[in-house]
Length: 460
Image (cartoon, rainbow, N blue to C red; front, side, top):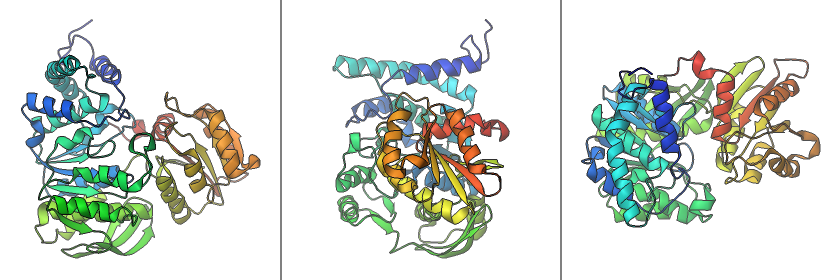
């Protein structure tokens, strides 16, 4: 064994694996608990790293990650040093903590863990004294994100909520700008099925005197968010009232849109992402950056163009193979699956589309499959390697009810499922058929690894 520069006595790869294994051994990130007590204590013990930078905080059911990526890219185009905290990750946990658009380096990840770990263990001990659990997986990663951003240091951190909002570990920040992306049913096991109640959880990120950007919302959601805005004397920008997409045209590699905000109309904005929902995400991002930087004035057109041009959204309508076409998309609830279905019809001229679908056991399989049914000719049911994956045989029972027996096949192993879907899609011609892998983020992550996406693109 050699002593490496990271000071652990093992290689950086081994050190990262050991750190991740330890964090993973804690309560999982989907283990929702309505308390911020542990987070309040640990940020206090660390000297409040979350106060070292300005914050844009983003909640909602769908579109959070893409919106966060766009906000970060626009801020970076304006010359600011940025932090970006998103979840979950596709390849490495370091993707969740980005500085200046890149995942935190392995060396910095290890160094920060070694600095923060004693405080984490102290907070664990205090919680145990009170009869409580250790900090959870997501709480520890959130703390590492705050520490990384303060250490960099960044000017602005764009923070995506993990689950809910009010009790989410990220909600110890005092964000100047809060974004509430579309609210829909998801995480029913933890947030319930009452849309108004879910909206109250999401609106819990709104702080006193904040500026709030609100996406188009169901009728039952709007008064809940309005009440939260009023209670905190916040200034709100509403999609459909203060901001809107004036025009939108699909284009090669994305779309071109005219976006109206409070400050200006931005015409001919190229968004290098597919799907109408990404134009709505772009509108929210633009309004959020205006709220943080513009002070009522429009942003520079060239900087807006640059910011959007550099935006990526891995795992969202992402092409991983071209012949035949294979797309991966992390839609994991009915709202997201419906957006995917619309995007497939709009952006891809395919005569045959075969779905490879695997869903986690805390999701709504019937709702997801029903949203996809109109655009999929056949579906190959499978499962990811996640312990939360719904077994393929159980998911197939639901799929046959939605699609009918003759349109459903089952391949529990993902590589076999993709091979079978490709064969079905080709149908004698590799130009008219395509495959979409969807249903869970874990499934998409495994598919991207199978196709070597990150190796091809030089993932950090």
